[in-house]
Image (cartoon, rainbow, N blue to C red; front, side, top):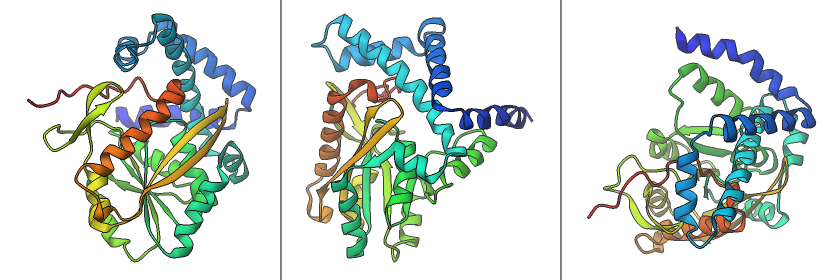
Length: 293
């Protein structure tokens, strides 16, 4: 009952957010940023610890600047996500465009009749990137996701993400769903910088100056199905506007060595974070697991 009450009582507010013009939306975002960063200090210790370990070469002032910029990005990201509820296809494509070479790359695989895996991180506005992909590219997009605990918000999130045609696959059903769609030319997107539920079977590497477990699932599926692996980055151009860039990192994953795919997409995400540190999700407890002895 509480889950239902929380959902239905917040629904009108969420739809109101979705129709706000930009100047009001980002004005509200600035106010939210003040509340989160200054009043409530949302995950302040987590963010500061992550930044200190990731950028030991930077001064306290430089890391504080990244922290402030990140809070603004986080609030923008949250409010921008709800624009998907009511925004037009033209709005979606205008606010998250594709680099011409990236659009050509996806068109190349669709024309060739080749399914692909896209590897991304919690970088930029990945929600808007999914919308634009489904509107711009010929092949259907499937996104691997973790269901939300509140079943009402979970169904709401699914409807919102599928509005422009994107398909969703729960994490636990990935292989079964991929086999089901193996005769369909498709793109499957993995958000690969989440923390594995167990560190025992993870691929361990150095990421942002720290020992980090990486999901093996993306690599194992790519090698098994031999789908080309593409790394995508959603770069912020200016407030409210993003551009996706992508490049193929492995054309024939079945021929790669163990750990090669995981290492490659981790290095590429790390490079993107160094280019624009505030664009990544620093409030995520990415390094809560310790490397086994």
